[in-house]
Amino acid sequence: MIQDIYPFKLHNEYLPRSPRQGDYLFAFAGNQIIVRPDETFFRYEDLAAYSSYTYLFEINSTGFFLIEEPEAAHVSLNIRQMRSFQPRHLGFAAVTAWQIYQWMNDNQYCGRCSYPMIRDKKERAMRCERCGNIVYPKISPAVIVAVINDKDQILVTKFAHSTYKNYALISGFAEIGETIEETVIREVREEAGLDVEHLHYYKCQPWSFSSTLLFGFFCRVRGSDAITMDETELKAARWADRDEEIDSLDDASLTSEMIACFRKGMVHFDEL
Image (tube, rainbow, N blue to C red):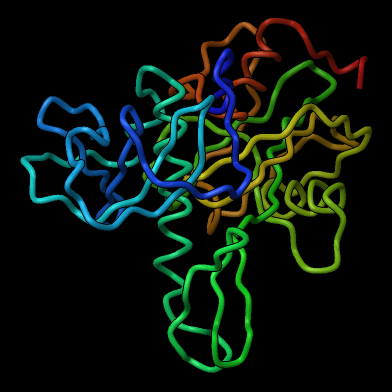
């Protein structure tokens, strides 16, 4: 998955410092990332005369900083291209930086009193000097659900309104007042009209493209496996056999890994 960057390690402790040689500089414009004409990332030595740097995080001992769009020659890439960017640790750094950029951009003014927000000096937060309101980075819990029926098939879906056109699994955000397990049950019932049981937690994934922390679950159908699809959420929902080729785009996502686990025989109905 995109965050699997070993032997590199993300250090997201907020210990801001000044940039130095070898550090990376990220600039964004909406959902575009600004890069050098050769489509590599700017380093501190490329723009050492730049006057304003915002510390983001480190990977190993290399720092990553946010800057405004540079005057130096550059091109733009869609942030989604970072899913498969190589080396992977830099693609992961780019989307994580973009998540922080989006959060800062969305919180330039206090939502309580409308006064301009400033970056806190002690923690990764935006602070209002007038009313004391503090806003931390947005992280929304959501679920990815692999549903298996008694024929040992997996439920695959396609979103009704998304730029992502490949197969996915049932997914959705947690609502106020519910556990993450309750989210699984509700989302499967809402999107596919199915009841599920025997929820097995798989693993989680930070997904910066939507400021989400994804929780992956395998589960099995309880009762009928007849699908009643919510056409406002999905344009396709069907059962797929284990030996079927399922196009889930790449290996960046938790969805892709869970589908691959099923196809490799690592998860069976009788085990749930």
